[in-house]
Structures are given as C-alpha cells and as structure tokens.
Length: 51
Image (cartoon, rainbow, N blue to C red; front, side, top):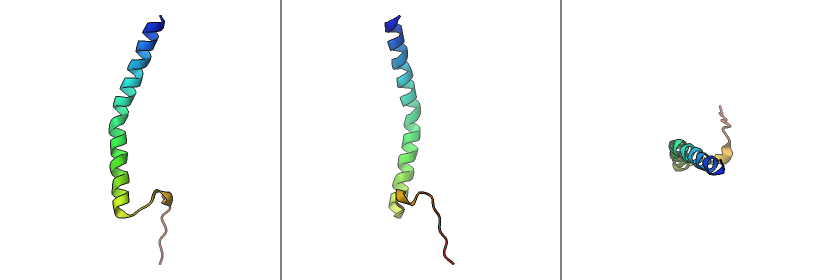
C-alpha cells in the first residue's frame, strides 16, 4: 500500500505544479511591468491622490 500512496502523492504534486506554472508566469509578468513603471511592491496597493 505504501508504494501506491507514494506514487499518488508524486502525481498530485506533479499536477499541482503543472497547474500553478501559468499563474506564476502571469504574476512574474505583472511584477516586471510594475518594476518597469517604477512602482515598488512596498506601496502595498495604497493609492494616494493629491489635489
């Protein structure tokens, strides 16, 4: 039974990694665009408008 559980665990880990790759790619694209525009992650989504 243990070998079957290990194989199942490996398959689950593999498929989760395959599913997450596009999400990581999208976040990397967003981060690089923010860096290109000069926006730092420390801003934390606080938008301030001055009149």
